[in-house]
Image 1 (cartoon, one colour):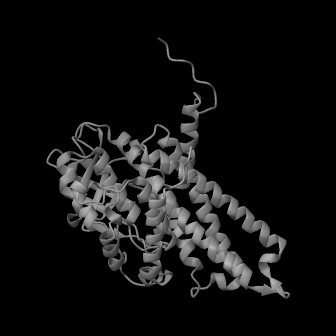
Image 2 (cartoon, one colour):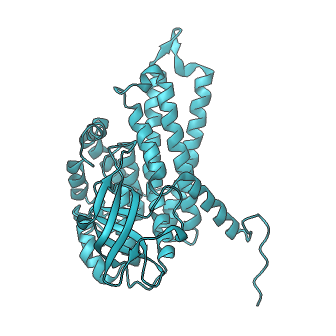
Image 3 (cartoon, helix red, strand yellow):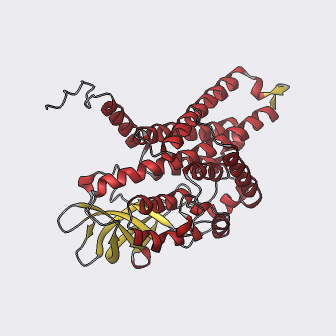
Length: 382
């Protein structure tokens, strides 16, 4: 079985890389980080013109109608450029409307996503820590309004539409779409101000159920997060690969005792370990991309594996970059801290790493017929 991308898809990646090298050098992420802007509006408009924001949106809804394989390749290149735009988060909300929205919601919202007019965020958590069904207190009332508070919405500073997990009047968990113009927004002091998160206070904010409102909201949310995790894993993979490439250039150019520091065994070992982590992440990401593109039954497990492996590779690459650049790597003038900031931001954007590791173990247990303790589950009666 071949999990590689087609020649047409690789051409799309080359076009995206060339475009970003011209329009989004690392200095762009720095300029947004040092400003009060929540993102690069110019790059966002360019991404819309290139058709990236509508990669999986059908042409009938104003999108490019490519597919998920193309979507993840674009995400990888955006990660490589440290692009200061909310691509993956916004794509996750569009994906939720695609998989669970009504035909009328698709016609009303998706053209705006493809054109860059709609920017989505996931408003899930109400306090620090892992989001659990029992922790949801936000209410979607019978009059079609929201009441409650959400914190840490990724890319929330730039968003104008939120996918919110809430409870209806019967206490059932539902997903709703909320316009953010009538919500109180509090921008967080983020480690990565080029992609700032935000909190929202809803007090009579208009909102509508995603879809017909009959599906279990938590089940739909898990499905949406799995699909978003694959795309974000590719963004992390791109960030990690760029950090690795720049670090490799540094250790070959920097000399000590008359030779490149990359020739020292200790440095070789560290770079070898990092390369192995990158390739493990890449193989898991490729399989997850295949599962996503084919909506395969193994998507839930593949998404967790890709998310965990890509998070570890991205974090490791950013830390090694800072350290192997030496004393200069800790300075503001070099770009190393930009990679470290982005790695930490992406690690938390869809939930903390520990949550995804626990989810991976749980899904492995289910696939092997085990309970949480590792014991074999008894066969169902009948």
